Length: 94
Image (cartoon, rainbow, N blue to C red; front, side, top):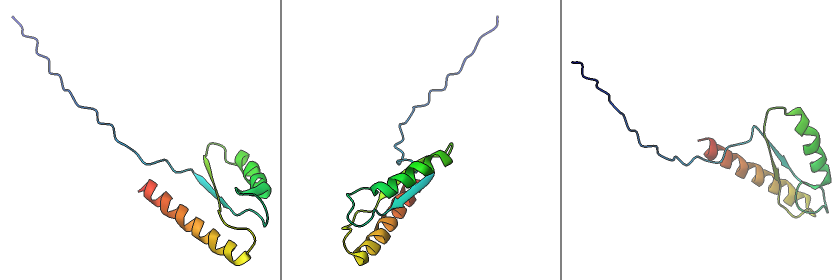
């Protein structure tokens, strides 16, 4: 007679932790002088108007965290936030 032979391959499924996915577009926005933390009303209006233009793409928003009373501090805080976000994005995409 005929012998029927079957081979089964069992492969363990490993759960691989992945980095948080990066958004397609990242908005880094510094609020105006005297505004509450976050992106402020102007930044929110910008984000709200940009959203519909990004059909099919994701958007992240990164408000610059700084004291809004000193323009020199504002500029350095903006640079620090952008640099930190760039490093995070590079590590996540890595």
